[in-house]
Image 1: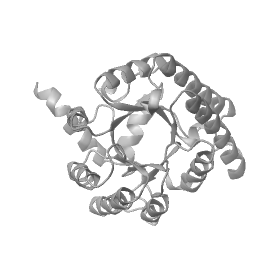
Image 2: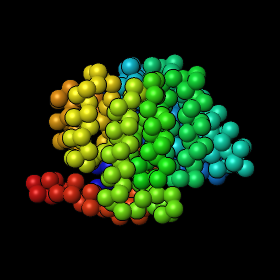
Image 3: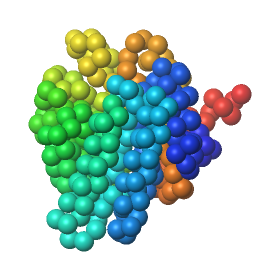
Image 4: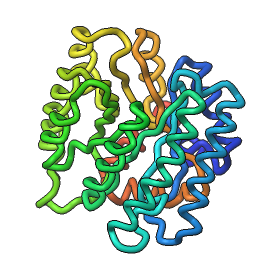
Length: 286
């Protein structure tokens, strides 16, 4: 089961998965698993892992035109080290090193979202890095009450914004907890991004939201937005969308922290368990 949702533990595993997805006409973003790092040596090691990953991707011809990019969680590279100011500076330096390497190899970085306590710092890091590396992306979570305002502010020319529902168990003061309220927030944020001149990255497996995105995309220039889905989730739909000419990027996690990744996602949002079960049904039925 794990191998369906996580590419493996090594760079070689990640690159193999990227090759397979590219052959299928899909774009890729790779995430080296691990977050909430409180050890400075570990943070340096994670940054180094991304540098090595990017070098291997480029050597295999996978980075041209951003076909395969990377996603980095700020807490994995030092956001929680020391006081908040020191942690943010450390994370920005490490992600800046990764962004510089990515840019030199023809691709880019997306600064991943985590729980609401990291949102301001993560957005500042992405904004500051965009001044030097314009393709650096940021991530918004529709579950957070603040996100509609953030989406409107970021729906600007030259911004790459991934919109997802959010996988963290947030307090009700910060986030919507009812599934329908989250869906409505997502739809509002989706429209704000798709109506703007930026580059929306619409991360959803929800058929209704995919249909809304496709309809809104009819009034946009070709290639001005993309769909994103998780590795192993609805691969047939990924292929279907790509066959229509849409840009479809697959979010591929890898690394030794796969157990924590799966457990956290299921624990943080129990609805994910239903998605996991439904995604297994075609294989079970065969």
